[in-house]
Image (cartoon, rainbow, N blue to C red; front, side, top):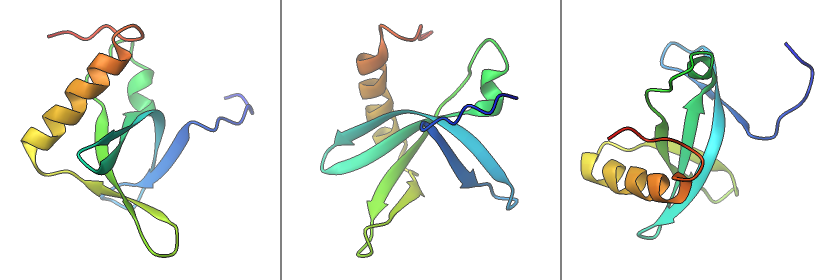
Length: 95
């Protein structure tokens, strides 16, 4: 493992309380909300990436951000379509 510090790494706590590292791919503003698109770092070890994680950013009064799971499938699809449009030159999306 290299000691190079990356500013695109986000560490979140998983359901089991373990820390999980993600690469920040994009932040998308849509319909008055902000979303973050993350790629699990352990997925990158494989050549093919199956999925990204999309979370809604919620800002609190202390100027801290929280990431909230998006349960609405339609909302997730709209954000993912926007992500695909923005990143079509960088990634090969299989339909």
